[in-house]
Image (cartoon, rainbow, N blue to C red):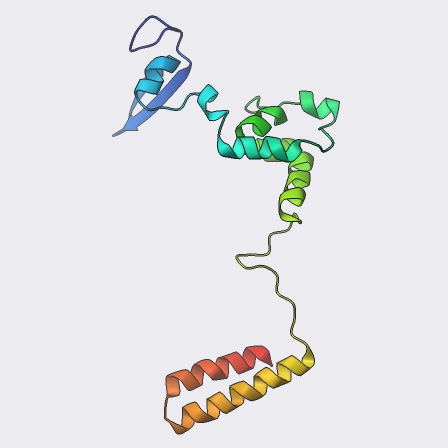
Amino acid sequence: MSCDQCREREAVIHLTQIVNEQVTTLHLCEKCAAEKGVESPGAVAKTPLGSFLAAMGKGTEQAPAPLAREACARCGGTFQDFRETGRLGCPDCYRTFEAPLRDLLRRLHGSTHHLGERYAEREPSAAQAREQAAELREQLRLAVETENFELAAEIRDQLRVLE
């Protein structure tokens, strides 16, 4: 299929636009796509994330030979494609490359379990908890004396969580 714009080169980028339930498809070569500001698959390959992921794999055990040749059944992407671009081709890639992705996450983050927005905090010791509770009770007493009931309610809630 030739490029819809220049009609000289082979189209490698296929853009589909849907406006008011009308589907328009545009087939572009790499040069015409670049002129329109559309990233081609070749341009995506050298992203900073792709370079970082490739560097993470250096000096470590490479993927087993069968996995290196394995491709996603849905999109045809390989694990090597992911290592070069930093992008998976589709949602099924997560299942196809589950084992090497887990290893990569373990190396990057130290764990494969998400703990939320904050780093895991150590539990305070019993002595520290008692000390903090005593300090909060004193703050609560002062807030009630000064009739700052909003602050008193916040401190009360903190005490409940602590105890």
